[in-house]
Every structure is written in C-alpha cells, then in structure tokens.
Image 1 (cartoon, one colour):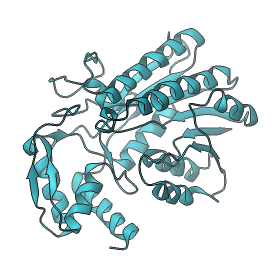
Image 2: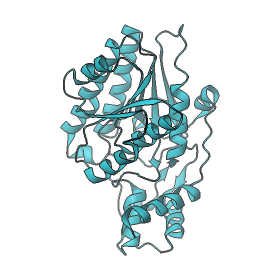
Image 3: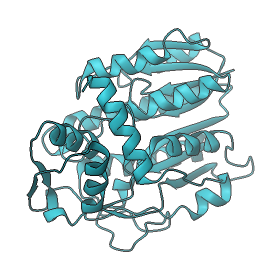
Length: 325
C-alpha cells in the first residue's frame, strides 16, 4: 500500500515524505511547483527524495478537474492521503486573492472528490492552519474556540476547507482529520517566513522589520515535531463508529514566544546583532498564536521535543550550508 502526499516539494511535504520513506512506506508525491517562491528550492527539496526506494513523483496542478482522480486510478495501492499542498501566506493573499481560491478551495474540492472515488481509502489527513482562529484573544487557542472571525482571505479559505472536509466525511464516510499547524520552521523552510527573512537580512547586514513594534507572539513549532504529529495522526484514523468520521487537532509547540526573544535567539545562533526597524501592525496579521495541544497529546501521544534554541540553531546551520555562506 502507499501514501499520497500532496505538496511533496513544499517545506512540510518534503519532510513528511522523507519520514514515511524512512519507515519503509511507498510514497506517491505530487506538486505543481508553482513560482510563489523559488522553484529551485522546491526542486532541491524534491532531489532529496528522488531516487529513494518507494518514492514516485507526479507534477500535477490539483485545481485541474479530475487530475488527481486519474492519478489514483493509476495507483490503486494508495490507501492514505496527506494533503499538504496549498497557497500559503497571509500577506500575499491581500494582493493575489484568486490564487487562494484556486489552490485552497478548488484544489481542495478536487482532492475530496478523488478521496470519494478511492475505494481503498483508510484515512484523509489535511493541513489547516492556526490562522483560522483569527481575532481570538483567548490564549491558548483550543479546538473548541470559535473560528468565525478570519483576519485574512487565507484564514477564510482554511476554515472553508475544514467545513468542506466535514461535509464530505458526513456524506461519504471518508475518515478525515484536519491539523491546524502553528508557525512551522526549520531546515528547508520557506523563504517568505521570519526565520529565513531575518537570517538572510542579519547575515547580509540589512535591517529586519518587526511588525506591531515587535510585540508579536508566535507558537514556533519545529519541523521534526510537526512531522511526528502528522504521522502519529495518520496512523490513527477516526474510529469506525464515529459519526461523521471527522476530527480536528492543533499541532503546535504549546509555547508562546515573544518576537523579540525569537530575534535574540536567532542573533545568538548567527553570531551577529540585527538592525531592527519597528513597524505598525500589518493588515491580515494577528498579534499572538498559541496552541492548546491537550487533545493531540491525549489521542496521539504528541509531545513537542525541540526548543527554539535548538531549532533555530539547526535552521541557521542548514541555511549557511544551503547558501554556502
């Protein structure tokens, strides 16, 4: 049997696929390699997987009608799906809203349709986001908290995904689990996120911009912990008597870090002091994220292991090696 991983050239997708291969799984990876950020980086991630026993890759735009249905027909051995492909980024959604409709709504529907037609599907796991909590001020964020005040179109599309997944689980009995990720970072991370942007600026003696005058808080979660949570969840689909067979969980570090402390730890890892520019709050952003992982720990034994000191040190070491800095 095999696992389909969408977004296999993405940050989380590459790491999840690699972990599955290490434990002897067959993995079918798909990605459209879109140019939202460096395609060369995505190809370099794929290169770490290509040639490994059990891995096959298909370049597919999931928003194309029935493209994934055809792939599943060619690979009847696929019995689990991990859907990680999406258009990320809160700020980018302010200027490119149609990209989010295509990648996060239309493509998500096509994935659901493919799952509906898959006769041997045991579990559909998909990525949601902490962004769905929107303007909530209660911390930490719990799954039971209201999520009806999105602060960005990105957040709205992720909440829509959760509703669509619930409907398909109800209508067709698809065993489904959604995972709300909290600020994932680590080696091979995205160049539009703070660890990469700040590291690049500090090494290059350029200023870093701290929004909300640096008074931001994030639940920074290291990639290895995220992967452990995803795979633990994959291995435990909803119970057969659950109606509908649909669940949601937070996957975070369960620790809220001040942005100023994040920068201080990064400065130490790099060995240089940052030049800081304080800026006002940006549209679509939220002041704080903080994951309540009580249910995730209870049901999957999920326990984040990586401190921000360890994680940022590993990221900086990878960044220097990747860029030959």
